[in-house]
Image (cartoon, rainbow, N blue to C red; front, side, top):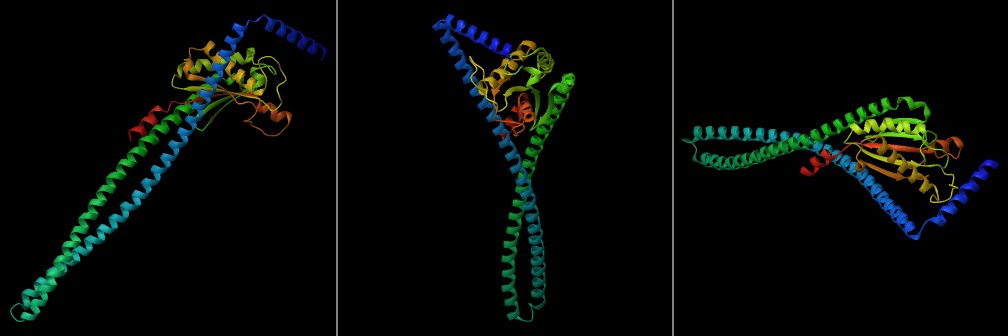
Length: 329
């Protein structure tokens, strides 16, 4: 405890000395950089939320199209039954017409009154026959249109399902690659799992950082190096790094004021480590601080707090092909 106190006093004194040596111009430059980092963080967080909303929208559209397909199948069956009924009525009317015509021929030479009645009935059946022929033609046309629409919607569903299946296969393959690369760290607080079409690499803080620090230790750097090798070859994967803390207030000083700052600094440190250890385009990476507000375990116990102190590296596949399909339709 005494050594810790002395160390704290030493670093506080050093911070005061360094702060007094920094010019106002240097301070303003650092503040501008800090503000830009905050703006980028806000933008990246918004982009991540937009991706989540887009995925929900795509899932809702897929469900809607599936419901439309089922309704079209029901409508197609109903129109088919109606068309068959109309065809039977048409055939019955035609038979009645032929029978009346035959009766008319039989009695034409004997009963003029009967002939007139038959002629009247014959005209009536002709009109009814014409109406039923038109109804049958309309129903057959509706049936053809319904079948064509059903075919188009089924094609769209099949294309979307094919793309989603491909993305699921890519995510599973990516998870296997990452799990294999990080297999040596599985017992050191590292976990790889798949959720919502993404691959999550979750690292406990003990694997990466000392308590209250955002400097990555040697073991953590080795794990990040292995992950960077995988991400170099997966150029279509977007990478979001999220820093998470427990609910114990941060007691440090200097530029880090609270758990929000600590979680952001840790996420940013992982981003920089990935860039240093792999040929990865910076545009694919983003950092986000979550502080204490997305815990894995809400119990207020040492075990729960240890579980919540983590850094999550979230790997998201490119969904541009799926978005393009929806826009084209």
